[in-house]
Structure formats: C-alpha cells, structure tokens
Image (cartoon, rainbow, N blue to C red; front, side, top):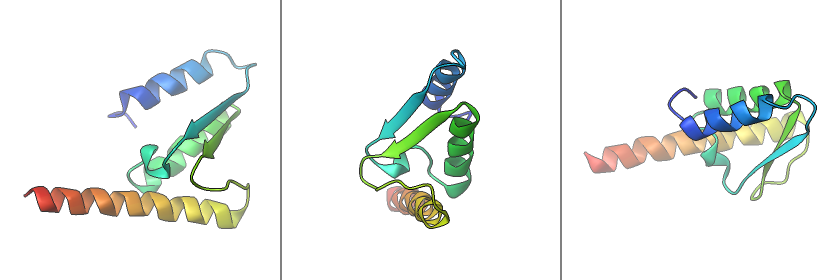
Length: 89
C-alpha cells in the first residue's frame, strides 16, 4: 500500500481518532487493491482501527464465503491490470 498515497492518508485519518467509528465505502472492489494480498492487508488494517469496509457493488457479510468473494474480486482486478499492461505493450 506504500504506493497508494490516498489509502495511506485514509488510514492515517482513521488512526488519528481511535474512539471514532468509520465506514469506508468504495464503488468498486478493485479500488482498494489490485491483488488479493493488498486487499486483505487493507481490510485487516481497517479492522485493526475498528473501521468497517463496504463496497457498493457487492453485498457485505462477515462470512468466510464473502471473504472468498472479495479475494476473487481482488484477483480479478489484478488480472485486469496485467491484461491492460499487456495491451499497452
């Protein structure tokens, strides 16, 4: 996430007030991570700061199945990036 200054700024903001409850909403799951590892790290970071993650395009439930779906979506975003890079060359 070091190469994502806006995500780092968001995490800094969330950690600045440990008593506040935050909900992070994105419109597309691929916006938080272009690979499953980054997406999982981001969600874990939010949990560590007592913040909740919501995606407008995917129903969210705290289940192993939903976590799997989120990982698949992150993997798809990673594939899309690789395919876009391939088209550009």
